[in-house]
Image (tube, rainbow, N blue to C red; front, side):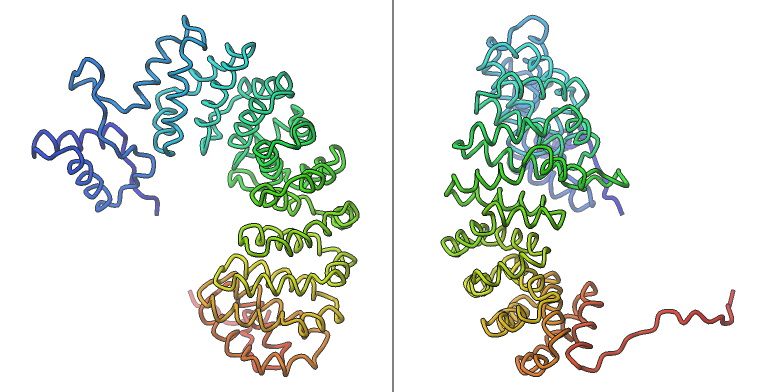
Amino acid sequence: MARRRITQETFDAAVRENMEEFEMDPDEALREAVEQFESQGVDLSCIVKAVPAVSSDDKQEEQTHEVLQVLEALRIGKDSAGVTEVTADIKCFTEQCSLGFAQRYLAAQKDAYPIILSYCKKSVEEREAVLAAVSALAALTDGQPDLLDAEGQKFLLDVLKKYRADSSVTCVAICAVRHCCLKHEQNRQDLVKGGVLPLLTGAVTQHSGCAALVKEASAALRVMTFDDDVRVTFGHAHEHAKIIVLEHNGLKVLIEAAKAHTDNTVLSELCATLSRLAVRNEFCQDICDLGGLKLMMTQLADNYESPELVRQILSAIRAVAGNDDVKDAVVSAGGVQLIVMAMNKHMSNSAVCEQGCACLSVLALRKPNNCKVIMEDGGTMAAVQAMKSHANVANVQKQACMLLRNLVSRLRNLSQPILEMGAEALIAQALQTHQDCGDVGKAALRDLGCKVELRELWTGKHGSLTN
């Protein structure tokens, strides 16, 4: 059931009442108001939980939040002032929006978007001004992609074209594009039609030495392949991935960028995006042929102590190993040993264990020889240990069950050693604890030769119906 919501004005009035009627100090009044509304089941996620600041003339009735004070100053100067004259106010607005979603939401409710966009359009010819204005637009649209309209889309595309040689302006413009495309399919489709994809891949190539820009552009490309807008039945995620690869050479661009960087955060972003682009069998092979797989193996060996990078590399290997030839290449390159080493190193990290089990599961699928290697190199034992360590994490249990099933589906002789590791009890526990493990857990028990009850949902026979 949806939680109740209140307006910012209602919340501020409650804080003011606590201060005036009950003589509480500001911090106590704020705390009391928060507790009061939360106890009533009110959703305060969009409420600025701060005592309104007093304006310069110190009038009680003109108390308001800082983000609204600076927005009002920008509103007043919108038609007369140039961007350079209000740069300080624009930067202050950006800082306020960066404090949290509640500040951004409140500003948007007070018509911040058309005001900021007007400054953006006036700033196009001056580098410092456009940098400040686009930064404000990026901050405002974070979590609010519905704000962007056709005028804003055109502005962002124009800035990316005009300032393609300027890494700083390009980076903030790409950040705004990413914010406006996350969970918004129509914005994605409109910007792709407007030509944003070659601008993103071109930015990575042109500014390959700029870590911040490479990360931002990689993340924006990845967002273009998302299917995360619940308002849309069928998105263009797959089509966008194909366009990035086939028309804009996306795989080569990202792999070359990865070869040029040693920063773990940059490599994590690039691996995450590569895994989103491996949507076809030939794309997986292309990643391998372009040196992407070799790069992943090297990075996994060199940076196995970094859990986030390890997780993203494992996710990328899992994606490209959908190709059977790549499976063999991973195993031949010693990939199983590296995956097991990473899992053992980060056994307390459920995300790494999940991706490690998933990776081994894909490598084992339809590949009996790979199954033998996984058994010999300790992959099965690592999966069993992951099930013990993360009994309450459904995804770890699910991926481990899939791995165990894949190992024995074509090699029944592996069942006994796996059962001796205690797999049956762990799978049974996963079945009881996690509903999502139902099918894969029962399939694993069945293929391991264990007793499993398969409930017959419907026999297809007519029976008596009671009204």
